[in-house]
Image (cartoon, rainbow, N blue to C red):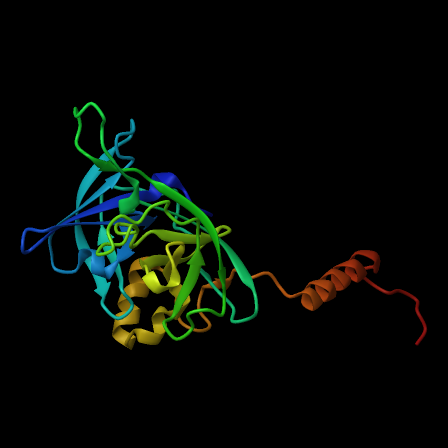
Length: 261
């Protein structure tokens, strides 16, 4: 049974130590039992990957993860965390190419949410950022991303580092369906813009074997004619036609008996 929408219990901090001893942060989401989706660039070159759920909450869990699948061109990766169980797999969605604005929500751990305990008793930490925004569907078509517009951080103190660092891999939902993950912050687009990798564009950059390996893990067909239901509402004419068909069906008898002609 599938699970709809954003569920905070599925969102995880991704904490990476690289082969060079550097530390890196990102965000991930439990898409089904034992499987966390994040961005490839978050875990690329990792020596260790830790996945932490519900940090500093009563149900906090931290697990050492392994990379089960990754792909640089799609910038997506799947991590195995055998100990984590989900209430069913997430619903995944595609986005039709038409003139529309999509309402979206995301949750992650960006750098601008860095907090310091004023007493000095605890180390600095990143709090969660729950951002709701919108994306004009036909933007960023060449890059294959959604241009998600969200409330910007109040400050940008370091021009050499994005205030959105650590948000990479954060899941983006439209309604009940996961449509992509946060991947980039293009400074030229402003502080309130996030580039979201669309799940329905992954197949364009995958070879047949790579796509088959991905689909075997997530048990969803991501290519054309696959399992990604369009999250955009029908256009007005189609909605009106559908409503008319339903109305006629409701008032018409199931069988026409003793009618001439």
